[in-house]
Length: 132
Image 1 (cartoon, rainbow, N blue to C red):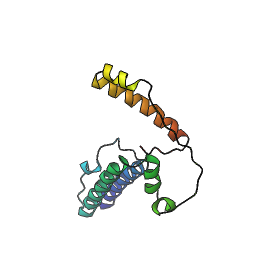
Image 2: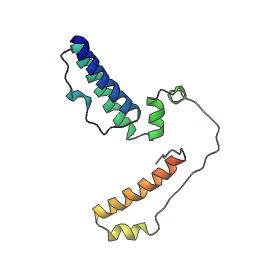
Image 3: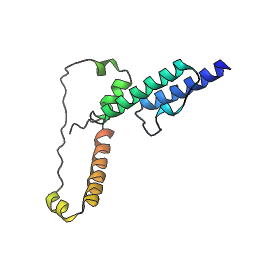
Image 4: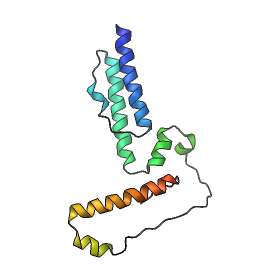
């Protein structure tokens, strides 16, 4: 019976860890599951804290960088300098001031979100990193 409880809890935690590695935060927090075993609860609470920290970190650092760190890529965890040829993309929305003055806040937010979503997907499809 104890083995079944431990195995079930650990399998659930492993699934959550795989989602975390992919930066998939869609599922609810892991803390909702309570085990009768104190050590399992401690492990779940620690994982929830780690998950919350990585989620907060991923809001300020490009997704590809966070995935490399979480994916345990050694190069991502070390300070290194590398000479590279890069392409820089600057983007502007023609007539943005007029557009922003003509739209209400919600429509402007929807427009910018749509625009930035398409731009981000394009850059990331070429393994690009968005800095600002």
